[in-house]
Image: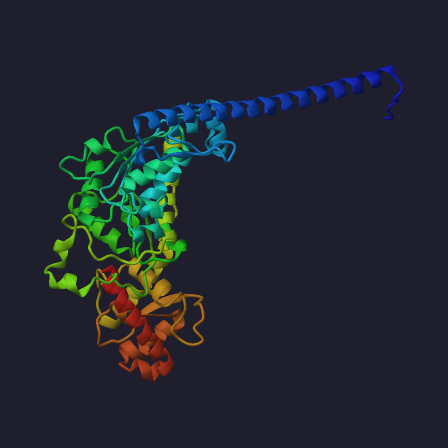
Length: 474
């Protein structure tokens, strides 16, 4: 169909289209003008408030650390301090635009009404607090008795050199108020105790447990569980370096993490087997050494008596800064999704390999019964241990050269004269495991004679690694 540009009808259509485009352009330009004008007005309000505030401070001679809140809005040269700004709702929504796009109006309304208590404000807790404030949570209580040290700076979310020697909660509070004009921060320089800890948790929708001390951690988790307070716990981030091993799961599913293991055991003694989400790492460190303590400290007597509080660590594990940060970001993400009403329904722990580990365990169980000549109810290893042997100790490969990835992996006892354990279990291809059962375990041949020195050397190295795992995890 051809258009006649000279016809009256066509000219009317083109005129209407041009008018619509012009109207849309004018409307968009007007919106941009209004937004720029609001920013200019806000800048002017800032400058007027600063001038008045500085005049009052000069007259009264007042000026302390609590007023060092630098705010930069609009022009980067605007260096205002301690300005109590009323933040327009439109600006709040612009700041949280990406979150609104993800969670929607209803979800963000719930998040902005949320109240979170962070107990432990070090490398994990500080990152969680920062991201909760950036995401719109309006009430955050920070609980920690400790101060920023130079060694804190490799992992803390907000601490700088000028914060060394100051309370961690105050350091975080300052930065949160620089990030958000609507967040209410309640900084408590305190330690959580079960005798009086209820006051610190009052009004919380969620509690974040980022405590290092096992006794206090278990007391906090038990208190929250018994009082129906939602709590998310961070397990051990020390001596880890592999971010791909960091998981979110129920505490009952945790594995290979010594802190999680100790907490899980103590909670079971209190009648709590599950129901607490945690972030943890399945990584088993190769070389773990405590940071050195000067010899003169040992000469003073019992090292445990040197702590600021009973049971708090004096000698600590090395920490790679990004790892506790990832722990904290995991926690913040989980809680934001829960607050919004869009929870992470099925976090994928390493238990995604549970069926594989169970099959390894069943096959190993059958070989042990054939070797021992009678039925056995339970092996000294479980399915998680089977996964540890295959995935971590033997790197998912056969102990036999060329160390290929087995098509059908299998585990078998290595030395028939020793009990089955992490140290005495080897990974093979299924056919090789059956051969080992027949010739080594049943016919009593020497393993080195059957497999040669190359395989025996691999097994010796893996046994030494397993010994370190036992010392670290068990």
